[in-house]
Image (cartoon, rainbow, N blue to C red):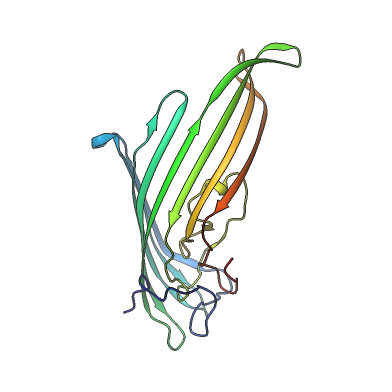
Length: 230
């Protein structure tokens, strides 16, 4: 067995014995997922859970089974104009692998704590827009902070994971990777402000505009195979 959770504190950049670049399309026989949500727990907390088991098969490349579980506890605090939600969770992963190269482990364990704060305010006012004096304009600033400590992941194969890119949706996501083979380290704040113009008589949204920026407070070390840390 091998526990990757407390690995070398250095970079996840490719190493001779490390990252495995997998080619081709993997089959999932079988795959099972479980999601659960429970609001209104004591102290007004909310519980969420996401779990998966999948057996990746391929005619020639590294194959294996992956178990993941992500329990989360959040505390949504909301009014008609204000929202503030702290959240904590632990992403747990287990890999049982076959066809690994010499020196690479067949069993890998990874436990990653995740914490975030999400806050927003919605302000409204009536303006005149294109002759309509009853147009409703909103101003919606939002701050989103996420902290994920680095975990050594260079020996974990990449079965179904890729970088998500940078866009309006992605900048408010915890993990910068789509998929469970990489949990990106993070110490960052996203600030964004949106405005909408709404026709109150019909509810039709006539215009949406926004601008946002992400601030990084530490270097990112977890990477995909062959990608240098930023």
